[in-house]
Image 1: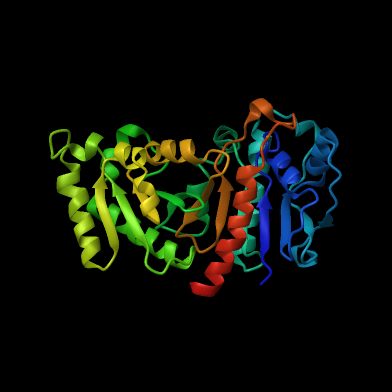
Image 2: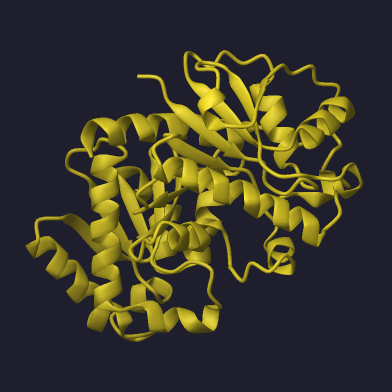
Amino acid sequence: MSQRIAISSGDINGIGPEIILKYLHGRNLEGHTAIILSSPKVIEFYKRKLGIDLSYHLISEIEDAVEGALNLLSSYDVSEADITPGKLSRQSGQYAMEAVEIGVELCKNGKADALVTAPISKEAVNLAGYNIPGHTEFLAERTHSSNFMMMLVNEELRVGLNSTHIPIGAVKQTVTETSIIRRAKLMHQSLKDDFAISKPTIAVLGLNPHAGDGGIIGKEEQNIIAPAIQKLKRKGLNVTGPHPADGFFGNQSYKDYDGILAMYHDQGLIPFKTLSFGKGVNFTAGLPIVRTSPDHGTAFDIAGQGKADTGSFGRAFKLAIHLSENRNQYA
């Protein structure tokens, strides 16, 4: 079944436009429809700068999209003076979020099957008046989703987070039985519906070093995480833990599980990016829409220089197709 994949441009002064153009240049979409959400001025600017001869269908309404081809939906009105690779600006943050908002609405209305978001600058979007810590929270708000989770994916490695973009000092307050049970159940359902895994296995990491060492280094594992795991098991979920995070990744135990639930951002993302950088995809589980993104940022330091690698974006695009197909079939 052909899928319609919307692609938000990301920060126009970052590597977003570059990785989109470089990945899609000359690519056979295999019957799927790609819709870039940007401005013709941005796309033409980077085509000239990068020397990419990319053909696309310029449309002003989604209904005009050419099926099975590359389309550009004019999504914001940009001045060429605002396109300054490598520069942080309020305008670039505004354009980035306007594209995301259009993509969300297209997916909510069933006019697109999935949204791939190119990198934004959190600083730029906050300068533009969006008081958000990142894409994930914004997408949850716009889709009225209270139960959602950031999941990083690289083929068979899938890491979900109990908490996302919060200060490390606030992490302890998020480690509750209720939160762990909710996140594990959400991961279980996503692995079934989105990844077509009929009987998912999930590893839950501990919070403290050595998973508390029997309560010597902390009692959250004994008092909170282990009881949550037992309740999940009684509900029929195949969940184990709490596992010491360092040994779990160090001895490659992650290969034995379909999903891994980390207690906080860096506990999950540092090993994931060490194992997968340039190949990982950020997926938001629990949303009513399919959304994927590269696992890297705007890379202002190399923007517009032709150096950006398209590996992560390409995997995000392919995963968006795969997940939307699975969701249509299994959800």
